[in-house]
Length: 390
Image (tube, rainbow, N blue to C red; front, side, top):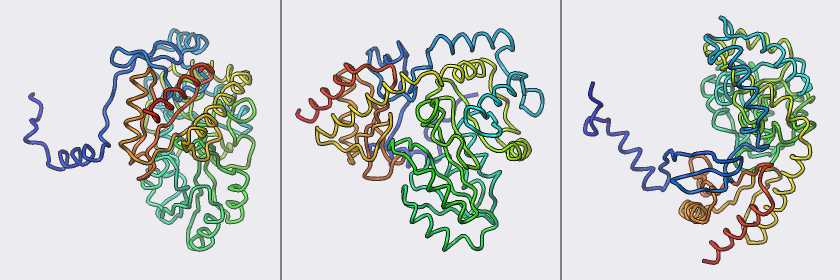
């Protein structure tokens, strides 16, 4: 059957694309060929990658590759069904038990992706008679989860706990359930939430607390298991696809909540389970990452030095304290120009534009890996300096 022609496409498609094009916000999908842990090839050019979330450099680690191959040989390529039907492979209970121990939680549940987890966890926890208060800079998946739940959503100012408390006092009285949502490390700014203060505020107002640990898992906290481990957090969600180098997501929680989610979380109930090779890589990452304190220390030294170097050049890195270091430029055209300049000089440093960030907050989002060297960071700073002085 012939594909639809451009002339028959609904006009809103062309209008929307043209709007993005005029605003320098039109996106594409560049083909990337990984070469090493920090090198990629784009359009025939080798670039040092400062855009990856592979914070510990585990994605190409031999232990994860061998773990995936071992599970592939044992279980095959696919899980064949949802976990509730026949996709709950016999390796999953021990994987979840190990994860719960590492997170200091009573139980854990493995899900298919961070986005899927967030858009299905929240509707399982709240309904149209509920109130959700979410940090202004929460990831899109968290906000989409609230939208799907049909709960009332109010955004509190970023990391402003006094504002959160004010909103809870003003709006919480009539809600059947209250959920506070934040992240331990924010993906675009690289700053952290005050988890102890969030716990205290949530408890005062009898609210559930959900924390997204996607960008802390593997990198921060005891054994690299995040900032929320062992704390009184009702729903502690994280991913395996960033610092742990594989794919998938998890929830660390009480045993009762785990049982509830098995019965009411649509993302678990209606999705085919993760492929066995992914589970093999997750198992290897959970064995390896807690022992990587030296790599984490190197990563954070690189990040500290990068922030200092950028600030010395007069550039803003916001409140970043982690391996995510934004170069906040504000203007979309300038962010794109710097990204293209760096590409010509051997670096992949993607420009992040609205709507991913708010208007006036365009930036480069520099993400460091434990595999980066000081020499690579120094070269990046020199190239940025050259752009500024060009």
